[in-house]
Length: 537
Ligand code: GLN
Image 1 (cartoon, rainbow, N blue to C red):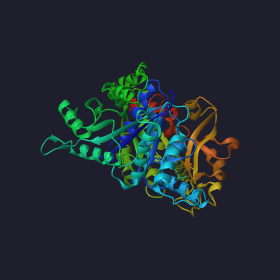
Image 2: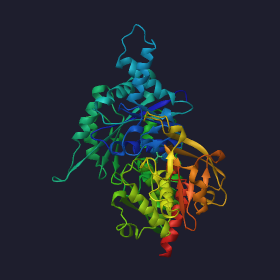
Image 3: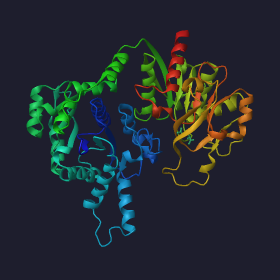
Image 4: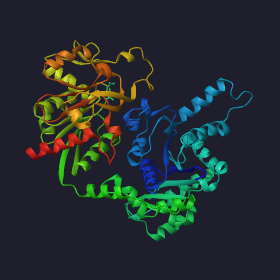
């Protein structure tokens, strides 16, 4: 192909319509048709990255191999496509302005008045083009909603692509909502019309409309939307709510002709054939589970669907691998007490404690870990979940009264979890944790070794605290198994309980590397052990 094509995915009417999943599905479909793609997320907020935002504000922070702290949609890109996501795949307003202002201070624009157009838009275009290497198509998801004040420079830059590289090389997909007004029992197209008008004000005529709707759109409705928006009926796709799994979405879009419309509009080769075999196989498995398994996930943001996104997805992947339907029991750690734990965890088959920061809810997690250890319930601790395992073992097996992490009790007598040495003089909060992929060594004859079937691993990290090596001998003499360390045994990366059906605590975040076709080995074995536990009840 002579030139790279660009697909911009914008959203209208309201947020949370699933733009990330729509963009990821487009990516998956184009890959299935034999194209090489790249995916990129533009976030119009002023933060440099998502790392400093609370899960309340932003949902999960997704970490890449190269240590970028990004939006959770980037996780969907990696789960749906084979794209390798790096720092370059995430652009925020903060990054763009920082770069332009730093250049201005160096005298780069000497004599000129620095402006949104062209300087900010040029920088946005430069960053988008950075990922356009060795690929046929770049898909750019524009965060936020059309009409947001922060989105304007990004939409403006997108519009300029038409002049820069030609209309046939740029495609605009706009995702909107067709709400049902319950009282009248009517579907309303007006918000979609208005949202497209907003886009057209900026000079962008969408090529494809994807309409979130709770039932299939009638052809009359498509014709009406077409008249008002200037998008032909065949390019208006009803993005109907899918019941069982997000992984059904690409096949649904393919069946509705989405890929064909994209191919036609971008003037791509028509003779390539789609191969959706693996997607169809996955759907068959997830629709026909052979068993069910109940997993408790214990966190303090548990009421927010997006806070543990990659954890839930990785659990689902492991469920598919084991042909099991997963019932995730979401528990708020602050509800767990010595009294409530039996009721709350009494009928679960496995307990997972994910990552987290700050003291709130920690004691409930420690009680849950004790219950899982003593009652031989499969346990999987991730990052903070591993540190909880260590604190609980110190208090209840080693007899270290009030042992704790220095994060939660800086004056504790037994700081069994301590600040990483490299963090001691770090004051800034943004991008300063131990971040990204590191190699570690796996100890033979452990559950970790059985899972990875290898003596080394590379996993992504995001933490400031670690197992305190000073107490290692005491822990080991009381049976705690250290099953993974960094090279030279400097940092402890994984621990396991002795005489327990399944327990692994890891300092890293394996959930970021799981995908529906290749469940992560620890999640896979954890679900398998939980199914076995259920069988024994
Ligand atoms: N708060 C802990 C730390 O900084 C755990 C971090 C996490 O769970 N991601 O080490």
